[in-house]
Amino acid sequence: MISMPSVARGGLLVALFCFAAAVSSAFLVPVEEHAQRGASRKQSDQFSNILLYTQHGKPVRFYDDLIKGKTVVINLMFTGCGETCPANTAELAKINDLLGKRMGRDIIMLSLSIDPVADTPARLMQYWESFGAKPGWLFLTGNPAEIDRLRHELGAYDLDPLIDANPTQHAGFITVGNDRTDRWTALPLLMHTQQLLGTILRISRDV
Image 1 (cartoon, helix red, strand yellow):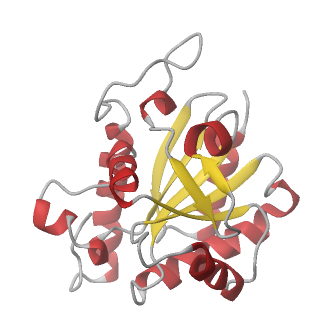
Image 2 (cartoon, rainbow, N blue to C red):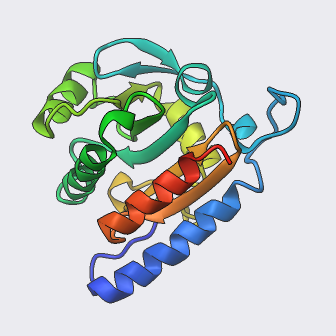
């Protein structure tokens, strides 16, 4: 996570690009070794298969139910974070609309709360509905320690423990991955909407 309250938009964009590059490289170095799930090792092997709950209260496993064989767009959020999360969520809502019928069919969005104690399924349901209850978009909560471990496995952490411990300092980026092709990247949400959309579509291809 990067603390950037006083950086101008241009500097913020550069900082987020640098952070996204760092997150992408983090996929190459797992936080801890997990068992290989398929015939060959993939980036998703490093993700813990933790139990989560959707905004509908449905229990799901992170890998088995949400990642396996899918193209995913993952962001970290929490409903009480102020201006940053609503702005990011609004951008994701636009992308959801542009992806149209592909949402929920072969592309899904996963918004993972980093304040799972406060963000109950009922609260996440209200938040989802406030952004139009878009299809193919799950808001997720669960055990705080397990979500924190998963956050690190996704590369979404700051090396400064004081900054990392402050949920308001998480950077506005998304992780985009295709588990079928093992293609993953991280993108700042300050990119132009069409650039974000184009990258998601490229990652989603099976060739």
